[in-house]
Length: 559
Image 1 (tube, helix red, strand yellow):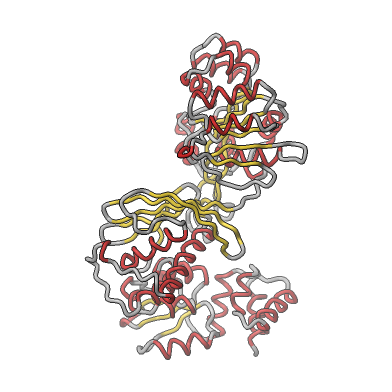
Image 2 (cartoon, rainbow, N blue to C red; image 1 turned 60 degrees about the horizontal axis):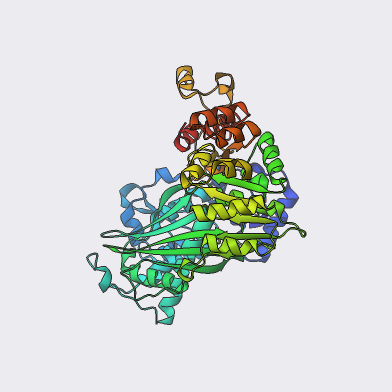
């Protein structure tokens, strides 16, 4: 039996219900001379585990889970990374110390021939699932290992080399290209994992790379001896960001504009000197399609926000700690309001995302362009809507208030723990109470919580006493779910993030209390009686709907 009919039959036996579609995909892959097995997996036609088991049977090879093979670290150092990664072969040890190569495509003759040429020792072959093999390769060899293998080939590596003594050969075309490929692979891997930040951190005897995914830092496996290329790697990043590669004593900031696989990516670069060399932080800013639905709000909250966005003037303030998604929320609001008959002008530090049709100003304090100065200029530029990146001082706040009182709709951010604290924060800055009462339309406090993975979340059983203690409504406990972990979420149990909000609308009664300088407790009591849902209670609502977990709400909301 030829390969296409065989794989088509195995596909049907492992979950595929559309034989003509399967055959068409296989024929197309064959015409492109690409992997037929990859084509089946990429099309999500089959149960991967069952397909791999049947494939192993037809090939006359044992099927093995990664747990059945000893994936010792030393073997990854010995078996060539470029061979393992190019042909997707996961090396391991089985009985009697014999090397076993796990593949998910046992009919890849090119892989067998390459192993026969480049690996002098005998091997045993086995079949595994694609996900486990790729995950094993990522964990075993690390990000960019193939490029690193080429870079390091022929070099003498000393683990005791000091940072200043490391070899930097960026003037050599071959090495420069390899370093660029390595850097690009790090970026590609980060974007594939939906990372928002990359941290490259030199340690005493190693170089650590970490991605921030869904708000949590996750360490990335890197090739052994990567510290030998620390200087080359950091120099490459500094060149891309147009920074001074000779300056290692002072922090530097820059920007990289990339296009990876057809997708534009803006990268903010910050270097920080440390005792082990320079640490580099990279913020990845992809072009997002800002839509109010991406916030994951319930209908009532969405209607409240839509009502606020229809206000002809006033200030709408978004509050929360760093990394709580305030800027994304403001961009979402601006995108919704960005029409042909509306002039929107922003002043930001820095401009994180570009919005078509919006005039965006990046502040530059070194030349005198501050928030206050930029805001004065904006008010002279006939805007309808203004966005100020942050209310940092009294001068900026008073100018924004003046803009709101003269007929402009103003958006901005504050760093406070909850919505009502926004009122007391403005008072502490020295803003007159009557100005707050007359100009501010609402304070929106925001947090980001991780969303449960839809593929693996499962119902959770929690003690009633515990639920009472944390204030969770017992009548909603049937909706509580917990994180499990699967292939889709990289065994974290979470995939993506969503906003939880607390909206304090400034109504007439609250305005009176602000004007009379009532204490925080009275302001909070009136906000609650006016219909405000607290962050904690909004979070409980999302837990009851199965979107997130109790642990996520508790770890992100104080009370």
